[in-house]
Length: 109
Length: 494
Image (cartoon, rainbow over all chains, first blue to last red; front, side, top):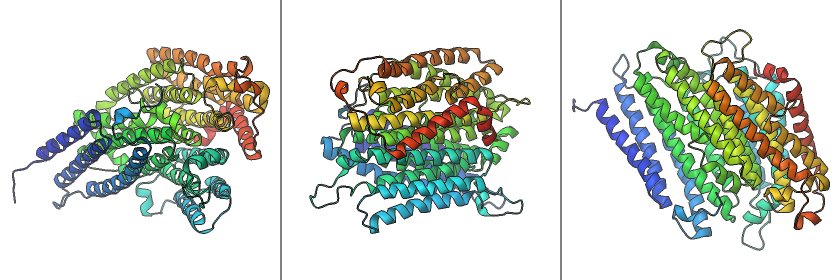
């Protein structure tokens, strides 16, 4: 089925996703939201991988599965990262009662 | 024994430590650290028994794994630093217990200590995998194995606000750099159609790949690895994280995390520098980042009064020298000339020795004097002459005084930069090295010449355990040997 979608469409969407994630990390002050934006950046990379995998077809027309393998590793690593990350954030919330990153700057610069 | 058996052994060792901790009901959990060190010493010995890959060996491991001399050398660095970090962790256990002890009265006071000795072993396994990784997937997985372990270790003192803050900062910026890394990897894979570094290198060389897309992938990867190694302008997390993390972990972070970043950077930069179309811009990007890192790292270190922060800025400054070696990578290697990979490996080896020696002393002073300010080191030359001598040698080597390991590290970098004709980088490196003499010797001056004030005046000698003494003596001997006979270390690199 030809949907008219090309590789460039997917790359554009993933680029926008990455930019939204990065902007969120830089602008937002709530640490949970920052963490969500970081996951968005990983999803952008995943979308890029799948798109390249689908359009880099081999001689027999099958997608190049290397990209999809990395995608599964990224999903797994991201899950591990979230598990550890949320634990640290909860511990910090217990100690400081805040999720605002501008409030966590007790060390001198 | 093939090289990949080593990682399997180290990883199993970590699991054994966790199981012993869970089921053996140890009264004193220091024995876990001893067990870990013993196992790693055995693995370090096995490193010299590794058989090279047989020509007919079709094991699937070799598709993403290299057992070159260089990767064995980096594995050695990983194991040695983990052993020393465990030795430091034993001395530091009092503070860990204080900040992790469970709230219930009946609980064992060391209930939170076991994992503190097991986690460095897992990080070591990750570092060793990374030393051999030749495929984007294995690079990514081993790098994340190291990074996620470090998140836990940095934030380990969960009742200490400083440690938690350091953990959160490291978490956010580490995850940000992971995002850049995988996006860069995705593009690199997309434009070359391969995950294997050799195939990627061939594809970039062939000229079928758009240079713009290649440079885009490179800049994403450079941002990611810039965070990992602490290159300017991605260095802002380093001082806070170094200051807040438990001292043995700070030491591990400064050595392990930096070595990890540079291994990956070396592998990937070789791929990009091999392509005529992008080599010029890539070398230029390295040179700009190296120059900035040299200046910012060295100059911001000067006014520091907290010793751990000083060492953090020093780690940025050393990243500058290492990046200079990468920027000055010769296009064509002449006979007798050192490649930039060899120079980086030697520098990292020297850096490991002197940084761990400095942090050993910092950890002891923190435990016994309850301070990390440089003022707390006043009079150390009189009260604890052994530790003061160790710190003197570490500082001399970090500054690059001749006949120490640090001197030859810097010497080879300067040699490479001069041969490549990068004169403005040489100038910046010289300014940086000069500033280094000032801030490193400031600590030495405090130890030997300044009169102690306040509590430090009445402080007794700091007790040094036999294990720490052995570690300090070993490090001093290695620093001096590398300072007299650098060829011996270069021979190990191959």
